[in-house]
Image 1 (spheres, helix red, strand yellow):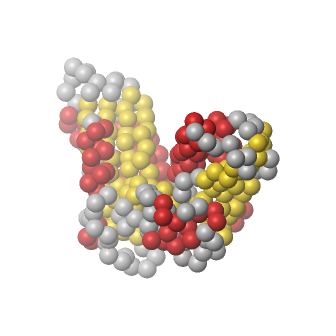
Image 2 (image 1 turned 90 degrees about the horizontal axis):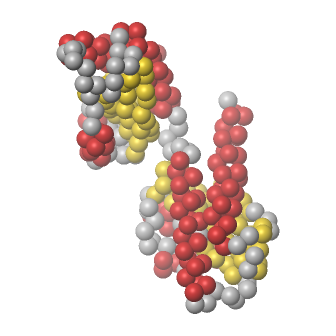
Length: 294
């Protein structure tokens, strides 16, 4: 399987039109046959065996996904698919094979999962074990709640030291950009959120920390469900605090906030502190709340 070709397939599928509404309580799932590539350079031609095993793999995968009546297998998004499953398997050596699997939320046009798995062996038993594992992973992804569309705005600096001039101001801007990038990365990797590009939508609003919640309206305009703003407050050249706030983009209600309290460290430590604060007060706290409800 050529990964570049697979990535292109994903990008094309993300451009699919939204699926029509499915029957209540039943989600449509479209699943293309996985591709298969043998780059093991083994002398024996195993094409017929691989075609048979791949056919059995896909039949079992479709059967497992359709069990229980929670999901309905359909040909395409136009036929009511809420999710699209695509993938490919590559044999790299006598004992090692890779399976690349992606699940796409058709309406949100976003990836639910995009993972690369490895399994050992090339016989009926090893393929069966691989299918069981992949089907569990796909069903878990289908059952997971859709990620929340979150607009993470650039972190701002509140400097009470009046020291941000010249080269210092340029350095501050660089470190703030690192803070924002770090927070977007950790939030996006959590699987709980889908990061919405903010572009320059907030540039004309001034300091978002002082706009009385205007970031929520901006986030709504961008198509986000929630907004996140953050601020680094410099107390001295070696002391600072961090804070963030999340609002509902539709109601403007504050959903979460966090404040680090006083921390010691130079400006290069802002990113580490911000990522830790958001991880602790937003991502991990919500995961704990979700586990408690189960």
